[in-house]
Image (cartoon, rainbow, N blue to C red; front, side, top):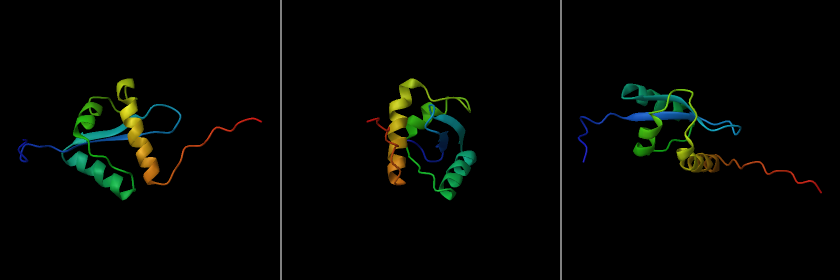
Length: 96
């Protein structure tokens, strides 16, 4: 069990444009993490609490795409966030 006095909150923000893999756009711990979370809440950005994933994503550089090994996990989170906002992926048009 972790000691709350030694626990430092971490946050990682991702950007996804449907064209390429999600990229790390912000990351930090402590007061910087609090600012990232506050901005996300202020702009109605869905949040997901997953310390293990944040730990892995925080190893990436700003602007770096997420690694292939994490793509499925992050894709599931993005899909869930889209669903929460009532967005659905565009369906490819079929030619008759």
